[in-house]
Image 1 (tube, rainbow, N blue to C red):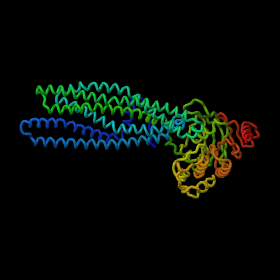
Image 2 (image 1 turned 135 degrees about the vertical axis):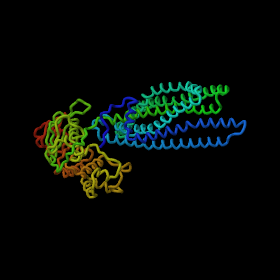
Image 3 (image 1 turned 30 degrees about the vertical axis):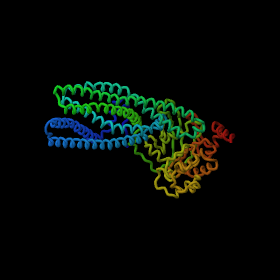
Image 4 (image 1 turned 90 degrees about the vertical axis):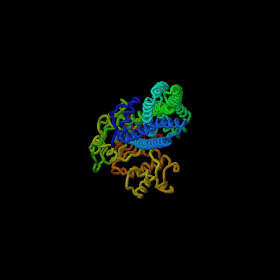
Length: 592
């Protein structure tokens, strides 16, 4: 799988970001060059027109006092039509090429971000909101794509038109050329000053857009909790604050961009006036013809028009640079270790798991969470991990699954270090049911057999019956082919039952249950527990549970506190010790 480079310095400015964007487009250099050549050629054809119009005007002017040379008029007219048709074809071809290429570039950026999501360690997402990541995939990529499509071709055409018209003006009449340049020089100064100040506002705009997307996604996902705790006011206040920040940054950015057109329109009109006045004086002295003045007024338009186009294109490039900086910041984030060289694959898995002096702390924190964890789970054992909230139970499971990497020590499966296996190979050995259920919009069948192939309806029926979902399935109009969406309302317990059935269908050598029955009622829990006990036979199982009554039959109970194992043994042994586990169990029993 191709991976973005991790040794590239993060984009910090307009120039640096656009260098990265240009390098990213390197496989499209050839086709982009064709588009640029088409844009230049089409613009050059446009520049030829005014000279022909000047000739046509002079012929007609001479004919006013005699006979008009209609053959010359017809030839010049046909030449102008041919020139403008060729220009139209070239510019249309350039537009089609740019539209096609930029969509492919955008597709590539989205694909790279999608691949990058799977390459980043779990701790990265602990400090980055989901909405912010989504904003990079959608808003930021679209901004770069639109800028490449519109601004690059516009900028090339505008620069060509500007330089070409400048040359043609000097060829036509150097006095009028200097007049036009002097009148429009102020436009360059104003454009440069505004562009220099506006970049920071475009960067803020993209940043605030990502923040507000993150908040909306977060609030929408938890809208039930927000309402239950009367948090609408606080949520609205937070949203209003972020919305106000976005409004201010967008307002300043757009105001800066909006100043360009009025300024350049004024400069263009001022140039027309200057050329007309000086041209009239020269015409009265018989130094130039009327046709020259007409051609020059067109060249002045060609000279001033690109200034406003370049200004708008530059503003768009600034927006794209701000968006591109966020994209490349994500693509350049430190990845997990490249494991393409790890080819170890299990044959038959016995299921013995050993934690050997495991030590762990998050990458972005110096605090150690797991200090010195050692334990052995024999093949086929049911191992329960219990302890107070924050003791490190789920962290141990994440380390076992290699969702996080240990700082020191080792974890071995059948005597083989998980460091020597790819993450995919580790994941193949485990079914996993978490406290937080995850379902996607699709059919019930698709949710049950997620990434498991060749599953028969009989196997689906057995799994659903085992967890108590069979009656629910039979009430659905389309059975397993019913789409889970807004029309089908599932309770939290039913979602949990569905995810447990998914684990049963996956049928992997080892099993991880993290508070798997926390959302179901007591009777359903007993039914599921019976099914899970059947599923656990012959499999090494790790069970995290706060209801200690559900793990009384565990072969080994590990009691964790503050990242260490403080007690271990089966239920009877730990009760006899009358230690921390006994206190936990008796407190639950007393409460019940």
